[in-house]
Amino acid sequence: MTIPKHPRLAWSQVTLDPALAKLAGVEESCALPIWSEDAGEGVPGDPVEHDTTDLLRGLSVAFGEGPEGNGKDWQQVHAALLAALAEVRGFDNADELLRSVALDFRRDGYRREAVAAVRTALRLRPESVTARCQLIIGVWFLVCDQLEPEPERGLAEVRELFEALGEGSPETARVRELTAYAYLVAHYFGEGHIDAGDPNVRRARVWIGDGPMARRIEAMQQRGYVDLGALCAPEAAH
Image 1 (tube, rainbow, N blue to C red):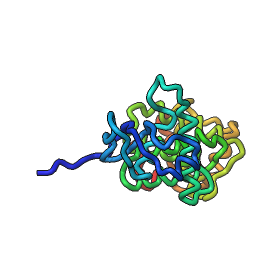
Image 2 (tube, rainbow, N blue to C red; image 1 turned 90 degrees about the horizontal axis):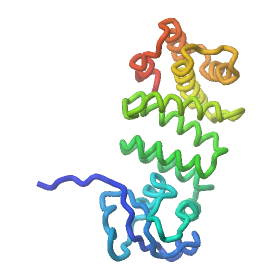
Image 3 (cartoon, helix red, strand yellow; image 1 turned 90 degrees about the vertical axis):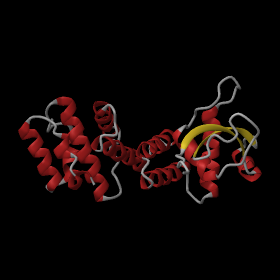
């Protein structure tokens, strides 16, 4: 009986395609994070070739990390590689590429890795409204699906991310609705009430409108506590 292999993260001695290495301005062989079923190949040992998708996924979840003591600025190396990979794959920038990687992770069932990839996108481009909203929704789904070991921390992060949007607005009505809904729940959880005078609250209420999510928020306030079991029902969260 063959035991199925599961993807994992490991630092492998990777041999890069010479054209990619030149485009990124990095060495053709160096220790890089790989996320795949064969992530352990090349650790330790001679350089090995890895699929660029495995490399891209590794960079997305372990951005800026690497072996210590060799004098390399891994954040700089990884940012250069991500920019080069974005160009090779036809994306406008690394932010757009990483958001695509996050969607692929989510499609394949790797929810935490999807969130990690969007975190990396936001680190590289903090002004990206799209990445920020995608991260809000990703963290919210982790809380909803009980995949966040510290839901209080997740809700606090949702709140911080939404408030940092400033005047930025998501591109679609559905994303506006989801991000605003997650924010109002997080706001209520943190404050014990929803401050109608808070500008972020006012903006979130406008984004939600008067549909089913608005009624759930109202019911939450009437109960006087956050019932995630009710608020994370499929019709509310998905």
